[in-house]
Length: 353
View 1 (tube, rainbow, N blue to C red):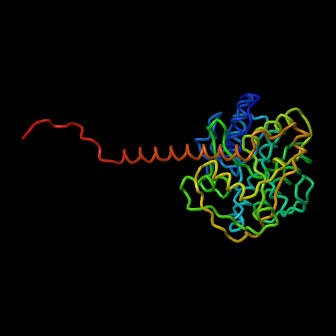
View 2: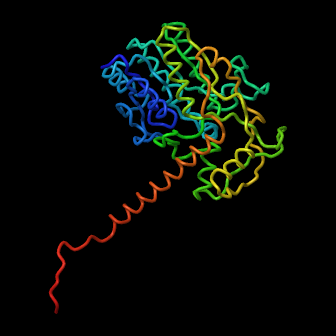
View 3: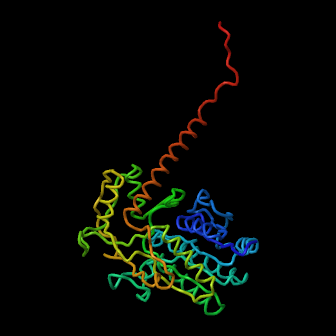
């Protein structure tokens, strides 16, 4: 089709959909490829949608031949840490085997550029306050293991077959599209800010705080939150970097600034003007005290800096999205209720007895 087509696996998901919007704004045609296990077709608004699974090589081949993308942006993966511990097999099958299928079809169709959605989970337990890209890679759960395996496969394909890649390691993606068109697409979410928004809107009874005895100023864990729109812009910069024939890169994407769970909770209460009850729970095994990115390399190589990742902006955008979804949900429920009511009679008699 067009030289500007980009295949976006997981393009109906939270981050993938935001990247599709950013791609369209930059003149690309994003082809969203998604099996809709966690993504939503409502999030596909800026280019073609092709339903399919990355483990289905025949379907991948069909879509790649039809759209002839110049690059692949790979977001399709299972991401729940707890679930990966309980059922690692599905994570290895979907994340690792699925990426193998994608890489094989990319090689067969001579696609030479891939932007890969990775994670800070590949680092494991931090050995210093700010994590740079040269921190030891020692993931502590199956999710992190599969993401590191995906990274290693991409590097090996690059060495053997000439693939150029951008591996982007996220810290805590949060917030919603500032224009109100997109937000968290996960039916089940385990991330702090979406859970705070659900609690504020009455969809949950309380928010769980796992540990108040960390070696931090207020005793709760500290995390680096980055707005999803800033993440999307980083992906566009990385794609342009690869399409201009520059070298492969591995970069952290974060703000280099942390916020504690308690600080995030208090700001969420202020923004939403809701009490947001909190339930104090013991620490979870493997949760580090502080997880913050050293993101200087992304600024140096890509000229990228987050511009809308203040915690206040993140929470405000997430709250606006949550409120909009609540209204849509109530409207849909009302429409369904009305359509299930007894229909009016086709004719109404006016004759008196």
